[in-house]
Amino acid sequence: MRDVPLVSVRDLRVGFDGLPAVRGISLDVGMGEAVGLVGESGCGKSVTWLAALGLLPKSAQVAGSVKLAGEEILGAAPHVLDSVRGGRIAMIFQDPASSLNPVHRVGAQVVESLRLHRGMRGGAARAEAKRLFDLVGIPDAARRLDAYPHELSGGQNQRVMIAIALAGQPELLVADEPTTALDVTIQAQILELLGALRRDLGMALVLISHDLGVVAETCDRVCVMYAGRIVEEAPADALFHAPSHPYARGLLGALPPIDGPRRPLAAIPGSVPDPNAMPPGCAFAPRCAHHIAACDSAVPGLRPMGLDRRAACIRAEAPVRAALVPA
Image (cartoon, rainbow, N blue to C red; front, top):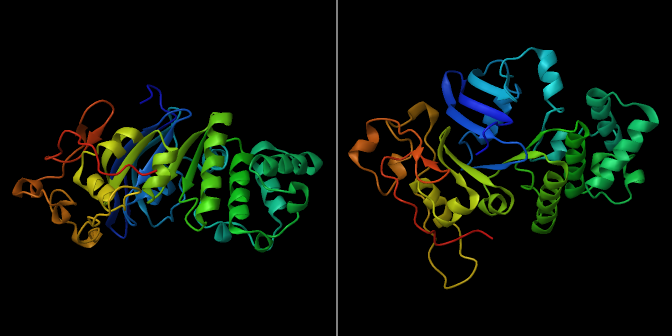
């Protein structure tokens, strides 16, 4: 983990109508680092970063600390957040069709970001928009600038979203399920593009996904989330070869093997608890095969489980090699 993080989140808590959605997230993202957030739907992955960037509705209750290069941005003044969002930190969402304005040409939407964050206008902005389209691999970029979103494929629209995000020359790109709606071929192209951009531009990346294979291929470090908390944090290779937390082991065990003999999938029983009826102690305890009475006495904190890794489980074992490493 980096000594001086680009982004430092400490004890971030988010609630809606008094119900907790994020229950004390602490994590760091270093310069140029790729961090994955994984977990089932509803565990708080997207809400964490929406809260960090001040993108939640005013009705949300948000507390904690989010620092960008040492400067507090959680609850910052609007003019400060305007320079951060789309500038120093950019976010792309899982559904480009709902993120792009259907009545404006895609080139104009890139130019708007260039105007807001880099003060570019006219021919210079259009030339830069074309360069960004070329950078993200949109064919016939000059002509595509004048297309509307409905005239492009899903993969091309996602590339437009990435171009808009890059327009502000961000230090961190937060990608929220960027390949969910794409077929596997286009998904691989988008992941390859994100990796190449990170290497070439020195940009940090946070990849939010429920797809373990995507995260294994893309990220240096992984945070596994469950019921609004991080339950395991480890380098990607270490996590996928030897998970410590029972929930992380369950996620890997539920994946089909790529090769070797067929075997039954080890599905995790039950579902993520309702925020209205959170169990005492460990939130995963009702679904855990290793549950004992002590698991219900207190919420376990993250504790060291070896070099650069932590797990929030009183019965977390020394890491054992997983049966499957996602390709």
